[in-house]
Image (tube, rainbow, N blue to C red; front, side):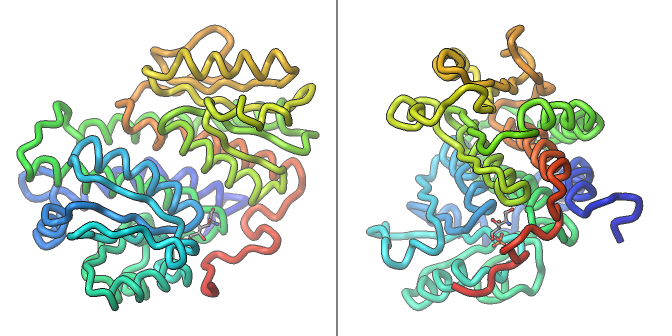
Amino acid sequence: EKGTYPHYMLKEIDEQPLVLRKITQRYQNEANELHIDDHILAAMNEADRIYIVACGTSYHAGLVGKQFIEKWAKIPVEVHVASEFSYNMPILSEKPLFIFISQSGETADSRAVLVQVKELGYKALTITNVPGSTLSREADYTLLLHAGPEIAVASTKAYTAQLAVLSILAAVTATSKGINLEFDLVQELAIVANAMEVLCDDKETMEDIAREYLATTRNCFFIGRSVDFYVGLEGALKLKEISYIQAEGFAGGELKHGTIALIENNTPVIALATQEHVNLSIRGNVKEVAARGANPCIISMKGLETEEDRYVLPEVNEALAPLVAVIPLQLISYYAALHRDCDVDKPRNLAKSVTVE
Ligand code: M6R
């Protein structure tokens, strides 16, 4: 099934442009407009607050999804790690809507919250890759990712599919409220798919970066501000789960509050710079770590680049940059794991779907 690919993970990374195009098609109506089931739209419009609940990579997708929904549809959103939700249950709003994000639709931690929420009589929407999965069956509504089976334990195409579906949900909700987004999401997603293709065709550079920065290191930091911070969290999770390099993602501004103490000579720091409003500040953080000996690897977006950058991503709509910025991080993790002879598709101690709490 993996054809000529040495690993499912690499195949699934490469599938991302295609999956994105498929999602865009699946969520278009006959008039080629983006479209979401009326019941789901009604639930979005009735909600005074949305609670996103998820684990791992799906939680990271939720953090980015919050930005789409708040900025475009103007509905307040909270994002929660499922395993913490029941004991740290927030004071709920009057009309909450719960969104569960789960590639497998079988994650026990998320299901426990869904059961609790249904007992309280609230509505729930599941965003999943698996039709008929437990979380899909037990929620009121489902949105499918249409990413095709994801076999590698490390989630890649499901993450970008989750972001795409969340962006569509946010944009369609905004339009239904009469909010003018000033861009055409179908067109913007098409640009993203092309950018993804460019990145997937540039594997040699990603392999070089992995060799340059990660060949012998014990640890690695990812920094970013705004949504780049969330993509950094995902990059760190990817790297640690398959290469066993200790990796952490930080908000650029938080570094000086403690983490900078860990920077030593040659510590790799992967910095993301895709957001114009924080471009100068993240570059300030890069200078701080470089002054302490770190080996910074700046990944920026076209239009924001400077000469010191190691890699420049093709330009896409800034809000959608996470869909593009994550791809080099996935590929760098893949090659770092490969160089270390790790079992890329089946990392130690992990299962594809975590069905115990
Ligand atoms: O199937 P789910 O999306 O609910 O799974 C959640 C996490 O277990 C999952 O994303 C995990 O973090 C991945 N192995 C990350 O690559």
